[in-house]
Image (cartoon, rainbow, N blue to C red; front, top):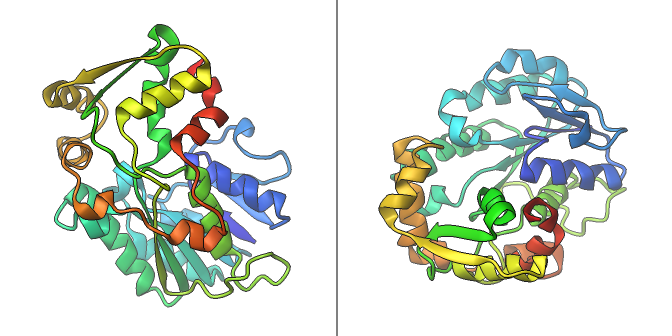
Length: 290
């Protein structure tokens, strides 16, 4: 059995669908349960990573764990306690959804240090492990959904700064490969993902202005682009996240490092195809913007 944490998120929900379609026995977990979020035949259990000892009942009988690093709430979690409970329950393999920021922003408390604490705990856990370090997600564009639906407008800073964002569905496919490593009923030709760190990016860099154009193409209607100043964007982000997270996010979006601009070959090497573009993602998820 495979336990998927964060099963209602952009990566987790896709991963549950992929595993279920492949016939893998899967348990979906999240802090909040909505029946619409997982396939009907997949058990969906309430589980809070902030309460590790309550996870034992969810982990019992599982062999593999997809663990998210907690995102904005990561600083509230104790990864070592989570992994101790996982090992005691019989889990032998963990795939961690980490962050590219561990390598590119190691001095950032929000994007580097907290994610690194999860990675260190995984590496020292004694379990077989694989770490995924994705770039920004295509699905971050959901932040524009309301303004596109109501005004056919995208407002964003740094209109022409390009980054190689990734499709969460591609992350989920890579996670599924690693979780099923050694499962000879699966179709994975890469049996050994143990001890590997994969950097996951899209196939090319794209800008916010180009993303707005891709949404317009998917909708079949014009979408206006409005460039925000850094201060305007910061004021908006501060309504959604702590100051340190907002400032580092703006630094990545506006002044990315060479490593943050780099296109990784890992998705294509692992999946045998190019990563999906933002335009691909927009076509599949356009309903959210109609």
